Image (cartoon, rainbow, N blue to C red; front, side, top):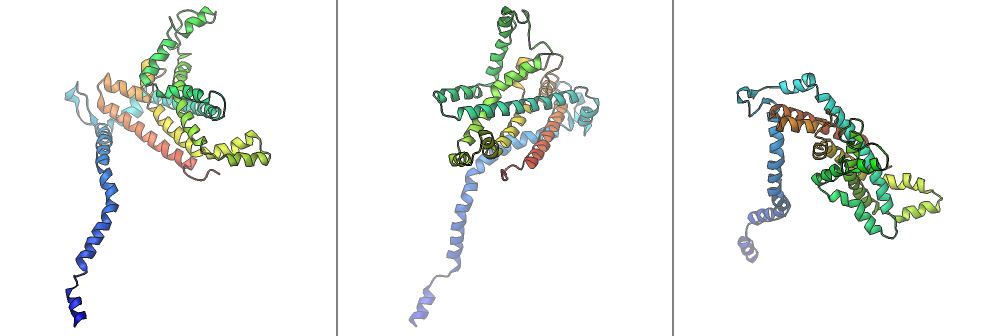
Length: 315
């Protein structure tokens, strides 16, 4: 009888079990609830502009000519590939600009990272000098190099004083020198990016590997190709991909130094898109070119990551 009374007084097992399940599920959902506000903000500030670009790429939209606005279908894309004489030239220069910049920045950044990774007197000051250009804004970088390339007060005047070249020469106005000039200016700003990332990865390489290699008689060159480079694989892949995307979308430096000139020699696809949207107010066609650039970058990034086996073994 006592046992039966105890059983009768025991609370049902169902509701507390459900409460325990709800309590245990709350900690699992908490991280998602905490990041939900930031996720919604990112969705609003990133997804909405991207969707808007794709929408306007299918429209004829020019605020200065509202009577021509309306649905255009794929006419803007057809115009870009068939009727626009500047599309292919600007796309070709964009690819040339990206390849030259990324390759040179990677090689110079790798060399600087290897140098400042060594132990020597004044290493802290050397690292600060190497990394300082990366802290300078794009507009300030452009202003610095505009002063350096000024025909009256810049490098060319001092070279002319030394008997090299002539007075009044402007490297940014000559089609033969404008490309090396803008490449040099962008290298000054971009090389520290690679140096910072590669140096950070070099710090994590175990010194025991190098000591074991020295015991086995491996030279510095063999250590570099068999220990250092494999360890830096993912850092190099990620940095080159990020830098390629940034250089493809580069507008500020080229716009400030040359404005795309002379004679369109330094006009990239993003620079032409900005010109069409800002100067001609043809936002429909500019959105179509932006969509094309987006697809190109997305496709090239996927192929690059696939071929490089990013995240895989370094062997």
